[in-house]
Amino acid sequence: MSSLAAVADNALHNAVQTVTPPFIAQPVSSPLQHFARFFQASLAHSSAQKQQTFRLRHQVYCEELQFEPGRDNGLEHDQFDQRAIHCAISRLSTQELAGTVRLITSGHASELLPVEHYCASALQHPSLTPQQFDRQQICEISRLAVPAEIRLRKLATAPSNISSINTLLHTLESRCCEAVAISLYLVAMLMCLHYKKYHVFVMAEPALARVLRRIGIHFVQIGDVVDFNGKRAPFYVDARTTLNTLGEEYKVLTDILSEQLFATDITRHCGIAGVN
Image 1 (tube, rainbow, N blue to C red):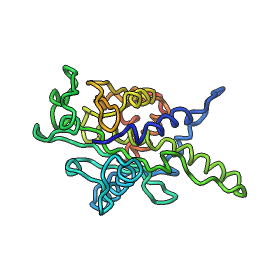
Image 2 (image 1 turned 180 degrees about the horizontal axis):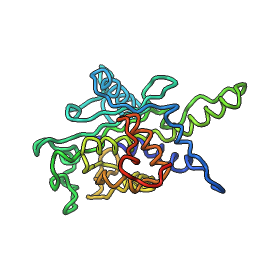
Image 3 (image 1 turned 45 degrees about the horizontal axis):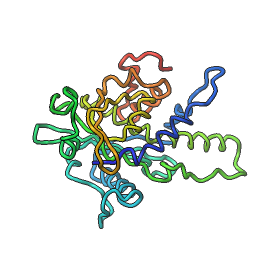
């Protein structure tokens, strides 16, 4: 079970506060339009790619946050990884991972999601629990990890003697760094839609769910708060609703991520209005 809030809450809050310019006297382009200049989202299909995500998870969950015990091999993985879809975001300037997330799937009733395995007693909603849906169409967002240098925005300061255009690029990269955690949630939604895992569950802090709602991902709390690496509650969203509820700049970012992952501009493909 992941501690998504602890990994992403500050990064999400900062991004929501700072990505959009504080004043809009006339139409202003979003820094997120430049995300692909600095970051690349990709599916982790091969064993080597998955090991990269496991290594980042170990860095974040075992070393930085100490939520999980360290492993001698430096790879954090568990029994759910064999039936998970893995994704990573890489920082192009360093070729290092800037974040990762997985979707845990279920093929039949015996393949429980973590929320069912660990927190079944907390699930209280009469209709929005995993048992109410086709097992082929459910999943759980898990192990979202962003390293401290991205999460806490500890990028190197731009040298004072560089050109104005390079200063602008450095500023844009810093602003896009703030959106990495958001991007991982958007990537998760895109994977849900692509693989038809429409019914999405997550264990998260209620405060994090409120931040995601401000972005346009409307998770519904479906159970009680429990103590699991902090105060967490189970949440649900139908991934098919998110393209209509996302804010405009996050629709733009979603299109960029969709193009990187699947070579498809998803909001235009699905007929969502209002995206330039």
